[in-house]
Image 1 (cartoon, rainbow, N blue to C red):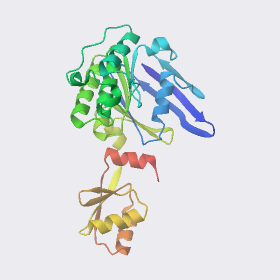
Image 2: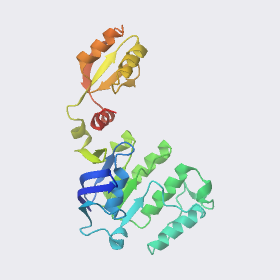
Image 3: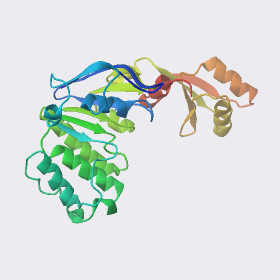
Length: 282
């Protein structure tokens, strides 16, 4: 459904995406992960044909992106693509008309807001409307740029149920997200940092044998402060301090110098910590 090969995009002297290759197959949910500025949205826009790559090629359904191929795509942009001076129902009717279909009945959860202007409803509800618009023409490919940002946990779970149903019906799905619980629902993950695709695979494959240094100390605040001041990527897990990829000897020396008694062990890293390691220093 998507075949992107060696894509590069530059804005002046700045390279937003560098030599990125990505495939998404029918029935597959691929999660695109990365911090703000990693290049996720730029990559998505090149895949859709809305940005021209400086290098590389894109194929949607085996052909270059075009109006014809985009007619088979359901797209939720970060900006949502809604008209603030139209009501919820009017936005859905307009979206349906663009694809030459009848608008679907309002989802029960959106029904009470059907006659409200988009500009007057909460951001999370707007995202649900945008997602409904993307689905109503039953697309073969869903491209979703952080579709659940600002949506409450229950609504997020419902949206992901819809994503999974679309994939089970044969649609391909590419979805960018910052939520790790969502990332774990993807069949495969692609991690970007500073415009590059760093690694891809299942959650288990991404974590691999990565480890975290776990520090247990009665003075957990002192331990955290000492390691944070040393510019280590320190995190808190309850009252334990975790340093992804941290060197035990270095950590123990820092804590000893700070007068903090602690026990340091190596434990398997989490997906969040793998992302920290992939992003590198800073």
